[in-house]
Image 1 (tube, rainbow over the protein chains, first blue to last red):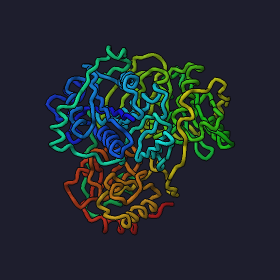
Image 2 (cartoon, helix red, strand yellow; image 1 turned 90 degrees about the horizontal axis):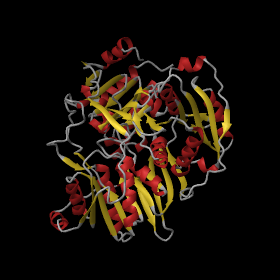
Image 3 (tube, rainbow over the protein chains, first blue to last red; image 1 turned 120 degrees about the vertical axis):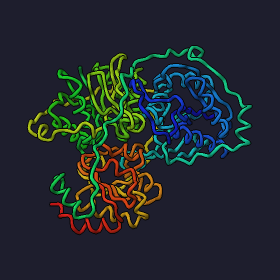
Image 4 (spheres, rainbow over the protein chains, first blue to last red; image 1 turned 135 degrees about the horizontal axis):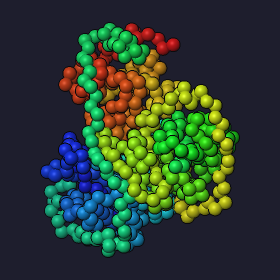
Length: 251
Length: 329
């Protein structure tokens, strides 16, 4: 079985983001970029499945400008076998990403598609569900545990839902999106970083894949959230209770 | 405008977060006819339908889909249901609350309808213009939907509070009708099966809707110590929350996690003990009305968002609070 993993290049999770003065978006020039943390978890899960002997190949896909190749190289250094880069210079919304992924699934025919549940830049949390819908595959979103049963051609997925953990059984092929607790992604070692340089990355354009990139969303502006006004520091529990009672009038 | 609100129900009652979705739908425009869609099976669905018909004065119709396929809110049949109901009703908007149900189902339905959804909306400025937080709430993005109908939204329920007096004052029994499921089948249905739900039953209020939330962080040091948080929450009639660090350390289960990757809460009173204030956590509680932070580190970032800060040892402060706070009537 082949596993396809989608990975996104985003502003590193540790960077404190800045909104551009013209409100057109968030500053990404000269900012450290990394693989989206949920995508790292997705790739790690695919690699573990391969290492357990169930999968034969892990293909990492990224979409966007040529810088995405760096992210794919990181994925290859973690252990992915091959990379696919869909080059596109403008903004790509989840529906277009899902359509491009569907076209790649038609070419590559993976038995499992793993994605991060959301990207930490736009926080959309949509692409996995959308590609599953387009493919008519079952979906296991927000996964905290995945167990594959190749005899039954199914995946048992624990999902983090409001109020607990839901367990589903999905027929393969399926789409899984990963939550934070699924695993702890590995670091790429130096020998693997060297090895990754010779791994193949195939390039496509949306035209090659016959996907029409539609723009049905428009960013009007991006602003900073309103700041909370500075609070007061208190010196005792009595003072706190007094404030809650007589100033905030909440207890 | 006409809006389909995709609602959840539990124990024969429409969920509070779905009523928030109705409230959000109301804000889409004046001449908006709002239809609530419920699905499932059994007598609890009938009761939920009648609760939905009078849950909010803006509801003009309730649609009910009776089938065992909807009992466990699997994305595959539910997304197909939304597609079917949308196509027969021609709604301009489809709205659901942004809980794990809506997040799982709405984007899939959007793909079936070939439109881009707008998820986690916190403000509706125009019928097709919305504000949604990005970068874990560190920026707010105003987006305009320019695509074909319908416009699919998930809304953050804490951003659309329902005026209880308004909903209570007018008894409104919207008509209830059944969804025709004769053309329902789809290829993906049956490929996913529900097995079980492992949940923590508590008598405390639901974290997402509680008036008071008492949260513990890594500073609690152990699951045993975390009981102090529970005791204080009980005293205040509130819910218990936790940071990701506390969840990862195994003090409490993950369904108590407050933050960008956990629950987003906006109670009247949020009390944080031993919480440092990571941006991921703050994203989940910054809209609380009053924030109290107790931490022994005076430089902890949580103090930057707290209305009332107290530098101190939580192992002394919590017992003192429990002793001195008035009992909740």
